[in-house]
Length: 443
Image (cartoon, rainbow, N blue to C red; front, side, top):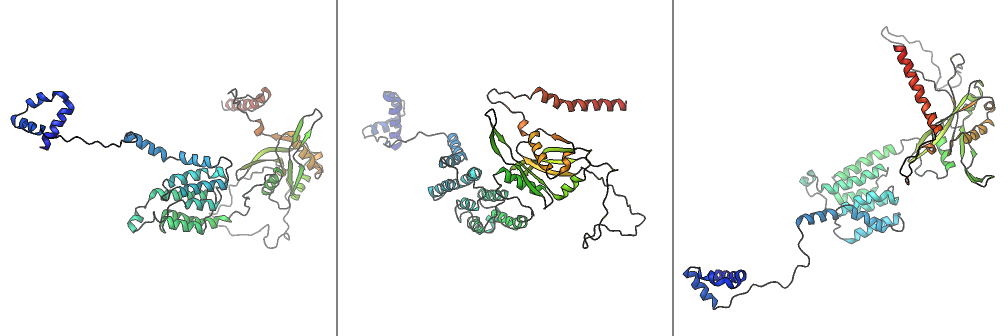
């Protein structure tokens, strides 16, 4: 009976008024059933009154939206929105607290931590151990801890463990040593035998060994004053502790006769008593040279310095002072030992002695032109009278102020002057002439 009702209902829905021919074509038994069921009230199809709120979306679009939501762009926008006023430690901690309180399950915490690690240098908290511990606190507790040796063997929750190791590696790159709170958080999150805990143990083993290894450490915060920065740099270069730092000119602004505002650079120099003695013994007929700039890196800051030096003395002018045996009783400066040598011993050593010449003084300035360095030489002349008799030559390389720059408005590169181009092309011509001469000698 049910089959007949369904069949009749489908015929009426699809064919409408054309159901009679269909009924006639049926066998006698089926026609009797249809006639018998016509007298009964047909059961209608029930349709739910509630309709779907949104249209069905294909599976490929749903997967694309999920991948888009899991990207780091959403969390980058979260940090940008939280730091509209200023990017400080307080705003960074505020964003972390908002994410922590938003959901109890803290879904997407791995992507959030990766985005936070990338944004830490912008907020200036890349060297703060409390911020790293606050990011570790974002992980849910006691969920990623392996329950048995099989889970521990198969790297339980590998994605979360890799995120924890990445956080510790960023601490290692910035030289931040973990503390007890870091260990407690790692044990609560990943357990006692996990990859982040192993990384923590390695850091705690090696960091104390290398922390005080450098006898001349560079301070974490470099001085902002250029004079203080130059004084610090020169004292690090000088090997003599008795070297004296002299400030020949402080940075200031002056107004010229034409009314233009001129900025005067700073000039800071250093010279030791032994360098003054060497300069006093210098032959006045041989010139001295001012060379530079030479780079010096102090963490992420690069400064330049200049030196006053001379060429090596000829062999006939070299005079070796005899050693004084009473100068040092503990460590003698000269040993005369008659050791018996075997026939197979070779007493000759292939050692190449390279004499680069003495260095008499060093200086630092923000503007390395000849006029500024003349001020340094005139200041040295007050304590070294021989500089008034010795010719001084300048061997200055092209500094940062003489580099070519690209004009963003016009989109083309500015060319140097013709004179500088000629000066730069002269060494190439000399090299070509030397090559032709050498080829002629070979022929």
